Length: 153
Picture 1: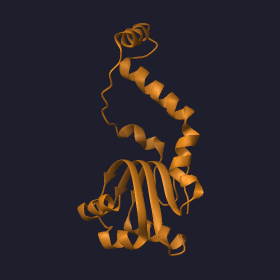
Picture 2 (picture 1 turned 180 degrees about the vertical axis):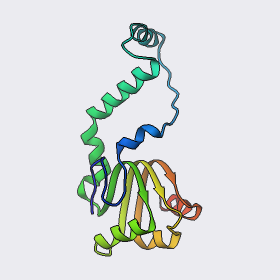
Picture 3 (picture 1 turned 135 degrees about the horizontal axis):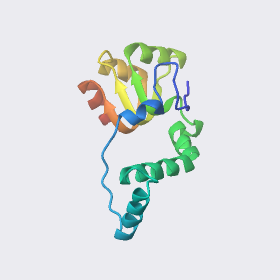
Picture 4 (picture 1 turned 90 degrees about the vertical axis):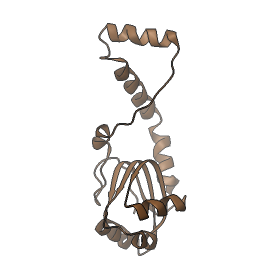
C-alpha cells in the first residue's frame, strides 16, 4: 500500500489541513537590509507582520519543490509501505489492517510532519509489522515504541 497524497488517508492519516495547528518555533538571522525591507512591506499592510511574510515565503518555496519532496517521501517507488506528508496516526487496528493489505509483509513508514502512534501499539506488535521507519518531524509514541524506532535508525 502506498500513499502519497496529503489529504485524508483511508487508514486514518491526516494531511496538511491539520498541520497549521502544530507549530514549531524557528530562529533565523537576517541581514539588516532584508529585515528593513520586510518592515516596509509590513508598514504598507502587504503582510500583517514579519512572521506572515516569512511563512508566505517558506510556503512558496515548498510549493516550488513539491515534486522533489514527494519523490523523497515515496522513495521513488522503491519500497513497500506507507508514505505521507502531514500528520499520521497509527493505532493497533490501523497497523494490522495495513500489514494485512500489504500481503502480510512488513511495511515501511516514512513521514514528513508528525507521527502519532497509539498507546495500544506495543513494541512487539510494531516489530512484527514494521521493517523500517523514517520520520522527519515529530514523533509521539509509547516510550517502548519510541525507543524501538530510535534504535531502528
